[in-house]
Amino acid sequence: MPTAAPPIIRVEHFTAAYDGVAIIEDISFEVNRGEVFVILGGSGCGKSTLLKHLIGLYAPAAGRIWIDGENLAEAEGEVRERLLRKFGVAYQGGALFGSLSLVENVRLPLEEFTGLTPDAIELVARMKLHLVSLTGYENHLPAELSGGMQKRAAIARAMALDPMILFLDEPSAGLDPITSAELDQTILQLARSLHITFVVVTHELASIYTIADRVIMLDKRVRKIIAAGRPADLRDHSDNPWVRQFFNREPGPVGAREKMGAQPPAKP
Image (tube, rainbow, N blue to C red; front, side, top):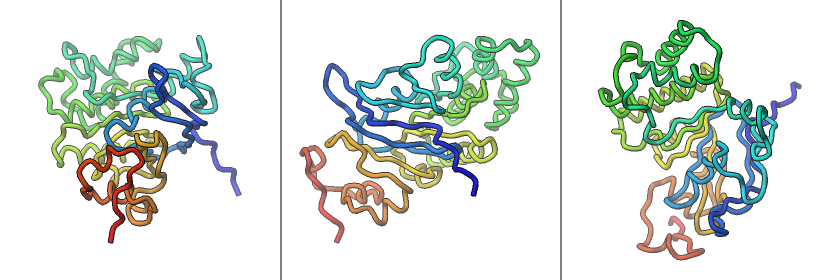
């Protein structure tokens, strides 16, 4: 039998802290190549904090993050630059430059980090926009487009350098259900056709059930991962009442979540 490919991301005994206060403590997980992996949890659980560490904005307080077999925190100089080129990031608000057209936004990383000719850069940028169904909108400014189109343009820019991994921060935030569903299909299409690994931070249940191969769920009360696996399995079979409540979108007693260590009542 062929040997399974090593994980593209490996997090080992990771701790994140601000001013000496731990936000996440001693968590470990792996992301497989080509899968859509979702990080979820309630407000304030550390989802965005974890993402910022995964893309190298912050160094872990403890533990290690491996990207394609290399330690992100210890990488320096050309090694770090090469490692950072292996992934792209699309932020929650899109972070497009408002004074530039869509094709100009996508061209930016190509102009900065490649030696391609102007004609080649223009061609690649238009191809990336085509992959997210934005052909015909290349010369539009971000303000002239809907929120969903801006999110797709941000994904196109994140793909400009042909990364192995795409990190998406709350991609469905602020979108109506139809636009959100269309964005979910774009993510699935890119993952399946280009074999890109997606790491998505979200708490949108509809999107989670649609796109996620696997998830991890963080809990701010214990500062750890309290569930990992397929969303439907966690919804139906988790032995943690709070996990089942989250995935079934069920209300709990007022204030119960804020009580340290408190668990919502089990389903009857």
